[in-house]
Length: 257
Length: 275
View: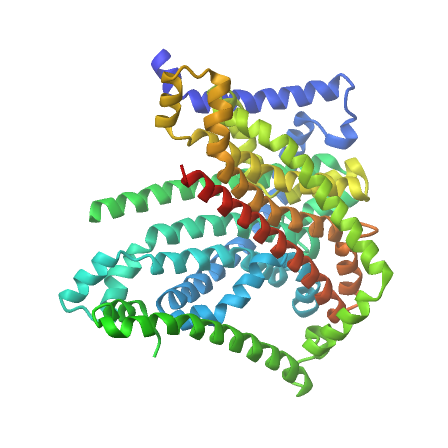
């Protein structure tokens, strides 16, 4: 029993703490400390979630958000890894891209959303573009660093055995950059989710972010909370899944050595 | 013709050429960066002029420069910038004041960590910006809700990095301090806090970016004043020149502040490395 507790202490205490927060929230509203208009209650949110699950709106919203998210992430990964590899291998490409990447780092992407809406209209294209731009920089920067930080000894050994630059690139630089690449991808996942949801708050006609805005305008806190909780859960699930992938890729590299 | 990794490493053998090669790339990369920006600006200026794109959507560098000069002469612009700045500073200072002590608690106490980690992580993963509508309902459409969003945006990077910095303190230093009779408080103030400073500074640097984004998004969502409010107005009026000026001002502010914190961070790191 104690061994069981030791092993799962983090999970058990963590769950208890989340349950305690929910209970405190419910009690605070029930006893009149907080007006439920402002914050709803866990029970009301759960009831609302059931209703939305029954009539299907919850799944429609979730799948709309996930659809935009996967498109944005796939685009960001393709462009970010492509440009990152080019810039990591050819310094001139890095020099040419550098000013724009610096601008991307410091500019709040969302400030440009009126331009996207003017071009692409309300809906999926705008949402995907914002998510794509959010996720692009970490993926690009990490890919570049991964290619650049290739093990010099390995590269030199490969060349000593007659490898041409292309061989070094395919056999040494690319495999060597996998851990950093995965790390960049993990950052990109978080940023893409933020970008998609924020864009949905402003310029969309579907999705969890849109449902938050819509219910906010009607001052309906319970449905808003349902969407917020759904976003949190999606974020947690994605992070856990990626942590798993990351451990796998790390293990693979250790094996190879 | 590029200095790819393979070639530059090859060059290490040809000793006399190395110094020349090493001087060359730096100037070369700056030249290329400058050229690429100039080409971009030239394209941006000429493509709408040739009628290939609608200048109403893209504006032009010359139009942006003119708009910038005009807006610098308008008192209302400074008023809006001042509102945004106040929101940012208030939210950020609040976040620092709360996140650093809690982060220290998180980094030093296992119990606190077990209890606080799951809710913190859930909120850290979820973009705090999704709470914007609900914060607006709680706090109204004026400054308070933006201060709260900045606070939330800045809070998590700082608390997480403070905790991590304390937790990753060098165990040899802690043990050495213990064997010389240092109490828990002495270890905290003399080992953990100095050791965590670079990590805290890194959290602050990440928080700057999130804070700036939060102000802008908060004001874009609903507001009556601020740079984000201007962005909203110019965006719906399709005044792209003025919209870009606002976006550039915000970017410059974020960039300057991030660089400042980065300097501080580097300073702290090298100061710690010296003894």
